[in-house]
Length: 185
Length: 204
Image (tube, rainbow over all chains, first blue to last red; front, side):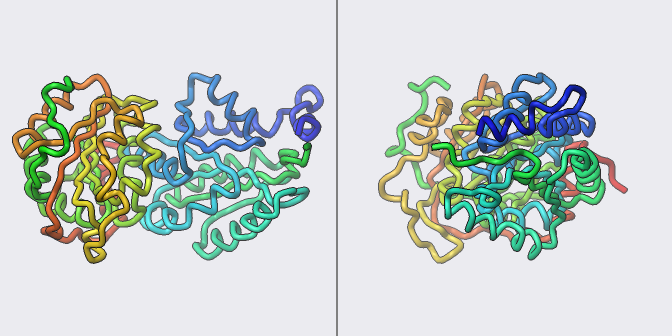
């Protein structure tokens, strides 16, 4: 993991890490509320969001719960997003179909992708295969983010599109972007 | 809440959801937000008289309290009530810990407990015979949680929650009657009117 993180967070001077792009783009779009269910790949992002007083951020027991919280907050005038991993997304089909989509709520989700490009847990690779079919079956906007140079464009435009069209979006953070989680013991 | 005033569970009267919901709505004078959970809970909220600050949850069973928490965090000066059934709460018990950690003082949670999934045919919940939802809430860290002994006590607990220094949970044992009304199932209008009612946006 350390080696993988090193690949993406120790960039040459001047180049931002992917998690810096997320944090700064959230701020620029006034996304203040960030409930999450943790993931190893998201560790640095979560730590930095906690350290920044701009954000209200906290763990939830379940991804559905975080979806409810940001939905309520958005209806009351506060923008938010949810951080999770692939297996957490797999718990969301019912609340996407009964809350976020029919009520036209701009639910913004960052999904750290496990289950591919070096997965070591068979269950993770299986549940990963359900993610895009679920998104596609609900005709939801989603992007798989693989390259740092286009990442800010995707994040910023996707947030703006979600809010202006009042439609959910899933931004899938590929191991090609983040380094992913690799077998280390 | 001081514990000596609040009556233990076994002494609670079996009340009626529509009656209690009507008593709550009659007390609302300051554009308080009310989140009505799936099924009978929001049917009775609808029947008690539509208000622009009411949100009716048509699916997403279990998310009533999380939605209410989001509203409470976004508008800390507005009182937020969340109405949910016992079966719904059982789907998302983890949210009680989240709420206990964040401690929003403007959030009052109300659990209507009949021990059954009334709307699906009255089957008992797994908790019905063995679990005490107030004890669960207290165990999650929501120390201001109490059973309402009767209708007067329910109203007293509502009043008490308005000046509480943290989130409050009130549980009421209710009968097995279905909801009185039927919410119009129009999610976009429900959401839009709620947002206008909360001042989060202007009508077109």
